[in-house]
Amino acid sequence: MMGRQTVDQSQLFYLFKLEMRIPERHLLRRINPVVTRILAEFREKLEPFYSEVGRPSIDPELIIRMLIVGYCYGIRFERKLCEEVELHLAYRWFCRLDLEDKVPDHSTFSVNRHGRFRDSDILRQVFEAVVRACMDAGLVKGEGFAVDASVMEANASRYHGKAPDEIAWAEPERQTRAVKEYLAALKAETEPNPDRKLPKVISTSDPSSAWTAKANKRVQFGYGLNYLIDIANAIIIDVEPTPARTYDEVESTKTMLDRTERCFGLKPKRLAADTAYGTGRFLGWLVGRRIAPHIPVRDASERDDGTFSRSDFRWDRRRGVYICPNGKVLHTTGTVHDGNMLRYRSSKFDCEVCALKMQCCPNSPARQIPRDVHEYARDVTRRLMRTKAFLKSRDERKRVEMRFAHLKSHHGFERMRLRGLSGARDEFLLAAIVQNLKTLALRIPGPPPARRRASFA
Image 1: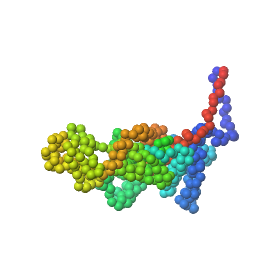
Image 2 (image 1 turned 135 degrees about the vertical axis):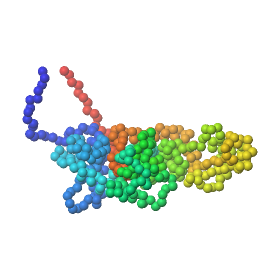
Image 3 (image 1 turned 90 degrees about the vertical axis):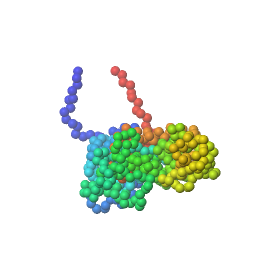
Image 4 (image 1 turned 60 degrees about the horizontal axis):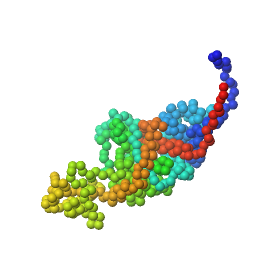
């Protein structure tokens, strides 16, 4: 017989304890002890950024906890986040809000997040505190690191890009935070970098983003999310935002390695990366720092037209010259071209009477061989590429790629919410904080899952 609800009046009084409603193995319960321990000391650090007069502001610990919830569950819009914390018991419990406590208004939440938090750089400090917690738990070995970058679509329309000389930045509608930040960065540059090409297209709403088609994606404005991870347990050691340009992403690795050594005293023995990082300049920097580059060398010297490649010429290290297949010497004037390249040239008279000329330089009177000024570091890397340790690092490097995959699939992070490099920095730091906390939570012994009792009819 079909049952029917007979109670037509709600209970007047309840004995309800929020703590008892959160499962023991819930993610937020498992990361809560770490977050509580980390945030205990940040109230004093944030005190100078709050005025002593006026209405009380939002507790900074509440803002951080709400942001962790948002980026953990893919709720990155302030209005939606405030609504979810209002309704979800686990979110309320993690944010230390009782059933009768009021959730901050989304507009007030935004003002505090984008104002005081950005001025205090508190998110960077929270991230570093989480990394130290991972180190204390023994999850960071500090021997092998991996680095990579992933393109995140900027919060900018791909149809509204313009050439730099076509934009009037003084117009009132252009006076946004992202534009002011971009113009301030231009003024701060003492001299233009010859290695960085000027952009052909700039977004009028987010000019710091880059016009890119990387990763076989459609052409769009984007930022590069740069992760430096410890290979042992895929802990994110550092994170840095850049425009989605290969040059900026490679240069950011130097910044992250230097900052990691300064903040945590960690210096890896080896660094794994893909071919985009295999430039002579970067390999030379790593070898100079005594870090073994487990990175494929970027090499375009091999020819496929039947003529001799550079590998057919023998390098005489003692004399500093190349020896051609016919035994003749190629010298250099010592002039550095394009900032990183030496040119070795054979004698015109030697080439004119050489029997191998048609296989060497059929369309020129003499043969030229380019050599990177950091070719020694490239040779060191080529030798490492033949080792078993290099092959192992090549497989372990996939762990940083999995970090990006999890961020996009599990956390819904595929497009930027904020604009400007500072906005990208805040979003990327929060993403890294959440991913490290989840990894740490998996390593913390939790209570065994409750056994289901068998029911008998």
